[in-house]
Structures are given as C-alpha cells and as structure tokens.
View 1 (cartoon, rainbow, N blue to C red):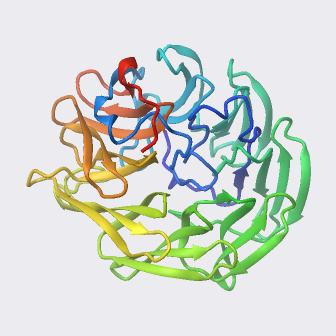
View 2 (view 1 turned 45 degrees about the horizontal axis):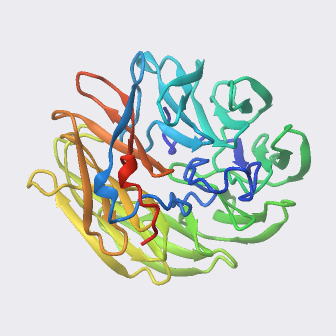
Length: 431
C-alpha cells in the first residue's frame, strides 16, 4: 500500500475511464475509482440506502484477513480502493514491504477471486465491469489495464501510476518524458492507443499535490522557472484553458470550484478557487495540521489535528483537533466537532461523504473506531469500535449501502471489513 503523498517526478498520469453514467451499473452506488470521481471529492452521490436514520444499524458483514501481513499506512490511505461491479479491489504491502499485492474480492461474501503481486508498489485506480486500470511501481513505472474478472493484462504503457480517474471519460491522459521535453498524451482507455499528444513543459510539485479531472477539465499543479502555477487543460484535446500563478496544491474539486492547501510560516491555508478562471474565492487559515478530506452538498470538510504526546511518527501518539465543515462558497465555518484523545472525546477524521452522512474514523492508536456524523450539523449518528487497545480502523469507501475499511493491529492482524445493514433494515429512502 502506498500513500497519495508519493510522487514520481518526471511522469504524470491522469486517467479518464471508460463507461459513462448510463452504463449497466448506473443504478448502483459503486465506488468505481479512487476518491469516487475525478474530482477526488470522496462524495458518493449515488448512495441512497444508508441514511442518517438507519446508519446505526450497520453490522459487520464480513472480514477478510490480509496475508501474510500488511503494510497499510494509517494516516493517509488504506486498503480498499474500488468497489465496482460486484467486486472489491484492494492493495497492500507484503512482508516488510518487499512486494505489493492487488486482490479482487467478491463484494457480497468477501471471497478472494484473484490476486496479482509485484516487487514494486501496485495500486488500482479505476474500474468498470470489465476493465481495471492500475499503476505499477517506480523502478519500472507503467500504467496497465487488467481484465477485471481475471486480473490478466490487456495493455500496458511505460508511464507513472495514474493519479486520477473519471468513469465518464473514455481516455487515459499521460505526461511523460524528461524535464523540458515532456509531452501530454491522450490514450484510448480500451486499447492504450494514442489519441492526441502535445508538448508541455511542466513539472509536478512535491508532496500534497493532486491532479483533478472535473467537468471535462484537467487541473494540473506545475512548477516552472517563473514559480508555482496551476494549469487547466481540456480533457478532450489537451488545449490550455488557463494558467495562473497559484501557490496552493489542488486536493479536490466540487461544484465548479477546486480547493487547495498551502503553508505560510506556522499556519496552513485552505483556499477555494474558481475552476472557470482560477481566481481565489476565499481563504481559511488554520494553526493546526490541516488536510482537506471531502466535499459535497455545498460543504468542504477538513481534518485538523495536532500531536500533543508520544509523537514518535506518523499515526502515533495522543492527538487533539477537530473535523470542521466549511461553506464551499465562502469558506465560513458551518460546524466543528472537536476532540482530545487523552480527555475522552473521540478525535475523528473525515473519510467519505454519502447521502447526508460524513463517515469518519478515529485518529490515534487506541481502540479503532468507525463512525458517521450528520453532514449538515456534525451530530454523531453511529459508532462502531474494533478490537483492543492499539487497533487502528480507517474507512475507505461507502458503496451500495455498505461501509468498507481496513483494520490494523490486534491478534488477528490486518483485515478488510464490510459493514452493511441487515436486510430488514434497508429502507432505500433519501433524507
């Protein structure tokens, strides 16, 4: 398992995938790609089964132990990347991160369907009922299309891992080549054939940058001789829409805006930026470590945290902080749920958004917890605790009336878990 903070300077891959919303699975609430959509909003707009009134009925449906062990990174990403077409696609590290494993599980039963492994990292990024796009490694990087049913290779192109996907666009966009000689190319997602290509002298920024594909536009963070910029191009032909000097790193997008994060001395600044023209609409300043978590329904959710004791490394120690909901149009604070792990209140981190629910997990190495907050108010609607002290639980996706996540620690080791409603509690209503 690798974190999203990993960057391969020199190669950028943006991916647009295969079937539009009118596909055979359009009626399902699948989580068909990392971040749910090309905007990386983590907002499943298709979910209609889970609602605030029934979420407290979630029960463990199945658990799948990860063998032989797990190299899961608690603070950033986790295991389940995609839930699509009745399958769950997950990835994790093998013994001492000596290799990576990609596995396909049956969504309803958790049964292993197939698995592949590689000596370098391997990460599923997007899927339809027939095709799975993955990124492979840094030692010999490539983008590959696998048969979703068997894991067999369909096509491969030497490039970096895919950073973003969008199921409504049927192309793969890659940026490859040496510094000063890079080209942006569009490939047919079914075959890997070249559709268009243009020269573009760009360089990825470092940690924290994301590439977004939203409303037919690709948002790319770059560095040039004139400083940091954000370039927006059309996904259809690669032509430039606008290029502006913006210091923030784009993290996700929603509702005609994208949201960036930047550091200023001891503060973190979150900014809302117009997708159409690149103007900064608002700025929110925080003295805490701050990460943009999800967006939807006119809200942007940020996780703020600070380690106050036992801060040996990522994901360890005692934290204080909060989940804060911001108005997506103005940046104003709508609500805030604070916590301090050493004083009793649970310190949550927002992980996914669906149907009026903000699904969260606990920060800190005590007992692992999943939970759900009302997205409009921050009120706690559900909590589920896992294992003894020292267990970490991280939510990965909300799809088809279920919550998927990873659990690390305890005597049973790393596990993938699916929590669902009993059949007699499924209402299918929308609040």
